Amino acid sequence: MLESENPGFTSPIENIEEALQAKMIDRGLSLACAESCSGGGIARRLVGIAGSSNYFLGGVVSYANSAKRDLLGVKEETLETFGAVSLQVAQQMVEGAIDRFGSDWGVAVTGIAGPAGGSEEKPVGTVVAAVAAKGQKPHIWTMHLRGTREEIIEQTIENALQVLYEKVG
Image 1: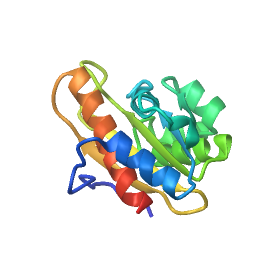
Image 2: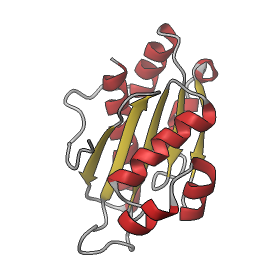
Image 3: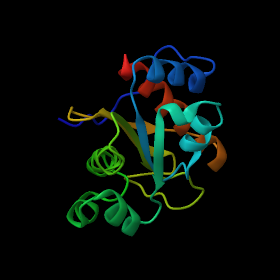
């Protein structure tokens, strides 16, 4: 079952990258990411901490639909039916990242950072994110963010990392 709305997290951690790294390494887990609207920002934050190679396997920046399809296995029919910014595409992106990298966990984001590209149905600031453990049902949520393009991207990254940290448990 896909979730359409979920604000994400309740208790932000100040340095989420260090906390996530400690948790992943302590539990012997690996991580991969699939990013669209964040343009590699999640991976950048993760590898900014020394020792990230002990758990972070890599990521795909799949900005174009063709990259989502060819690199992550997102189905063309899903893209055509629901659009790139959808619960269904986020789910296939996170599952594709886990599958392609062989990781224990995955995180994916797709959205409209603006300032253009929005619609009445999906305005600028609409972002869909997903986190999942290999072989388990993904946690998928929609965010409606405000601010400049850079602020929307940073909010997306922070929110995705916070939720991932909480879901890893």
